Length: 401
Image (cartoon, rainbow, N blue to C red; front, side, top):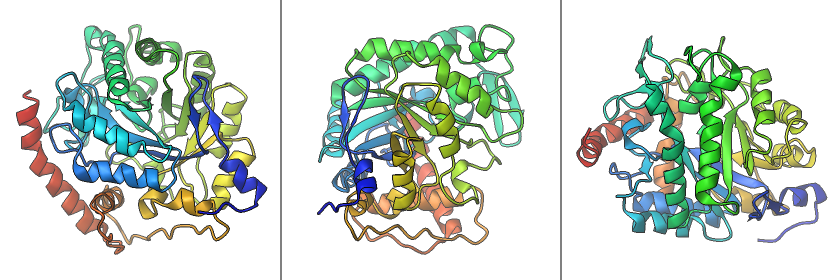
C-alpha cells in the first residue's frame, strides 16, 4: 500500500487520541453490525474470527463487534456473542487477538435487546409493556432496571480481561437503552420515565458503572440515535441534550446513528436519500460536547468520508455496508487509485431482506468464499431465517430458560 499526497485524504488517516489515552491509527472505523456469526452457544465461530481478521487486514482503525450480550436472557438473535463468567474465554481471546491485528482496535458493543429480544430464545422486556403488531413485551421491574448498570459493568470487565481493546454501550436503533430514551416506548411514571433526565437515568448510571469497572485508561464508547425517525420518538433536540449532559461522563467516543429496528419501522440504512445521514446533526453536536464524535450511516464514497473529517463535523467515520462489499476499503482509500464500492439495487425486497443479504454476505467473507453479488433479498432472508431457526434449540440448550 502506498499513501499519496492528498492533504484532505491524509487528514482522514491521521491518528486519533481518545480522552483515555488510547490511540486509533486513522479515522476510519468498521461500525457495529449484528453479523449473526456466533455458534448459537454465545461463542465465536471460525468464520466470525476470520471476518474480523479480514477487516483488520483491510486497514480499519477501529472495528466493533455488534450486539454482544452480557445477559443471554435478552439476546437479539441466537448468533449473538455472550460475555459471561462461564463462557469460552479462549475463543473470545482468539477473536480479540486476530480481530485486533494490524493495529486495529477491536471493541465489543455491549447490548440488551429489551423489547426486541428474540422470543424463541428470550422473554422480551422493556421500559414499558407493549402490545403492538409484531412486538409484545412485559415491563421491567424496578429491581431489573437497577441491576442493569452492574450487569453491563461485569460484561465490560470481561471484555477487557480477554483482550478486547474497548467497549461500546448500545443506546441506539431501538434496543433497550434506546427504548428508555424514547417517550414513544418509555411510558413509565416512576423515576425512569417522563422527563428526559429520568429517561436517561439508567444509561448515565450504566456509563458510570462501566467506567469504574474498566478503569480510566480503557476506551468506553456510546452508540446513540440522533433521532428514532418515528413520530413521538426521541427527537434531535433531545439527543443533543443527552450529548451535552454526557460531556464529562467518562466517554471516549460517541457514535451517532439513527432509526430503529422495531417491526415495520424503516431503518436508517434503508433510507432512500443519498449521502451520509447524520452529518448536520453531528455539526450541532460538536458544539455541545468535547467527546470525539463518530458518524455512522450512508457513507458510500471516499469523498464523503474525507469531507466529514476535514470539515470538523466528525472525528471518525463509521462504515458498515461499504465494508461488507469491500473489506479492504480503508487500505484502498489511502491510495491514489482509491475506488468506491458498487452498492447493489434490490427490486421490491421483503422487510428485513436487504439486511439479511448483507448478513449472509458476511458469512461468505468469513469463510473466505467469493460472495454472490446477485441482489436476491428473498433468498437471503430465507437462508438467514433458516440458519437462525436451527440455532434456537442450541441456544436454549446452552442457556436453559
